[in-house]
Image (cartoon, rainbow, N blue to C red; front, side, top):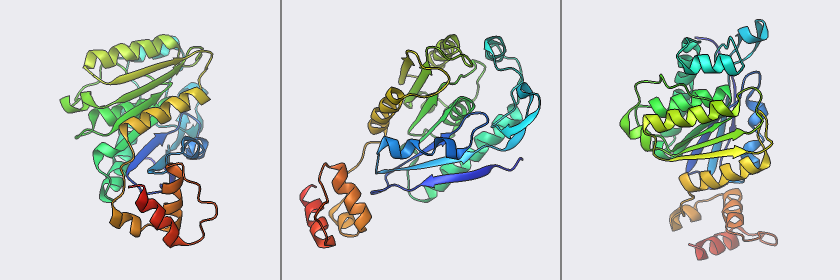
Length: 271
C-alpha cells in the first residue's frame, strides 16, 4: 500500500457531535480544502482532510502528484468509457477506500456514531467518497459528492446504505467532468435505489466550487448532522472556548463576559 500524505484535523469549536471527512481532488492536498470547515461555521462538527498518496498519473504524462488513484483519460469520452465499465485503477481506489474507513473507525472509537459521520470529496475524492459511503458495512450519516462521477457497475452495496442522504453538486460549465457525466451519475444513483439524493447544478461553475454550493452544503449538513443540545452536566464541564462557541451558535454575544460562571449560567438558561 502506498504512503498517504498528512491529515489535517480541525476539532469542533463547540461540543463535538459529528464528523465530516473531506477528500481533495487530483493534484491537491488536504490544505487545499482545509479552509472549507471554518467557512461553513458548524461548531459542533469536526472536519478531517486526508491527503492522497503521491503517485505517477498517466493522464498527466506520468507526472507524480497527489492522487487517490491513477487516471488514464480525463475527458468526456474517457469518463464515459469508465461509466461503461472500462477498467481503471481499482487497486488505488480500494486502498483509498480502506484509508478512509480507518479514519471513520477512529471517529467511532472517539465516541461519534456512524450515523453522525459524513464522508465527502471533490472530483477524484468525491468518487472515493461515493464508494466509501455506498459500500461501508453499516450506513454512514451521509455523503457529499462534488464535481465527480460514479460508474453503474458498482456492486456489493448493502441495502441499508441506499437510504443514506447524498448531496451532489456539479458545475454547468465543468470542462473536466462535463454535466452529462453528472446526469448519468444521477441515473446511476436512481438505478441503485438511492432514495435521498439532493442534486444541485450550479450555473456558470466550472470544475471547482462556489459560494452558493458551500451555502447549500452547510444547509444540508445541518439537516443530516443537526446540532444536539448538551445536557446540563455537559454545559457545566465545557471549557471557556466551548462555552463561547455554544453561546455564539445560539446568537448570543460573549462580549463583556469575563467569568466562566457567567457563561455557564447563560448557557444553562438556553437549554
